[in-house]
Image (cartoon, rainbow, N blue to C red):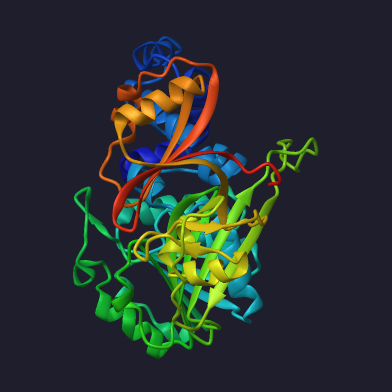
Length: 410
């Protein structure tokens, strides 16, 4: 999509084309395009509408029902913050007292829209002209244009005296490739760090794999997971910082029968947080009856020791983040399994044990193992009707497999 096509899609004729494209999208793209052309749509408008309809369909996972009226670019959708994460962040920014927020590198507007919905005046700044126009279109489409305006400009030139808070999401891709050097971000890392000194309340979205050495002194580093997937990290600086490290675990519950204002089923999100400002190491001990696989946000936040303390658990290897306990304790921060067998890894012995147990379906988890789960699954030649979970790990440096089942009380 280019600027001309976006403008065309926002006209009454474009809206009609989008409605028609939505009806035929999701199937054979050639048949869909032919159907739109046979309905009298010009080829370029039909192609743009079909692309947008497909992007809207994919965007539902991030934006929910709101995706049906929004506009997207492929790169913008890929890099956009999930709505559940953006809303939680916006609420934290709002409760801190921020009234006017600069969103530097606003992309297609995911975070800015959430902040505007929370009642904050948002100034979006975006260097790419198409992305900036898309963000502005989304502000209008969601009815938030009075609280969220977009400026097409270099983020480093924005007048920060207009705001009392900053959100910055530096671009970490160029020509479709991921950038690993923070100094090559846009805006560059040194400018991002300067924001934390110029604006007392600054939050920076960063990659989940951020090197801990890059965390500015005094900042709070937060890692966020959604339904067990690690999705992002953020640095809360200045007055925003309350602890040193935070793991935020978001769990989306199945839709309820209650319809929202748009007629869709509503989903409730449970928020769980584990925090610490100290540096600790979990105790090491033998393999015990239960094994916990910590949420990736907990692992990346270096909060395994804090979780171990809460669960009365220990590590079996100081370098591997599996925790072991004698009794199961309900926790949102880890998956708990009951261990039935502990074996030094041997494909022959494991295959024989699973055949004896009539196991035909296995879930495979691993930390500290070079084995490829799908290859192992094929090599096991499973044929039974019972399920099992396999945990591939190391104990005292030795390759080990734990045969497990779900902990019954959890």
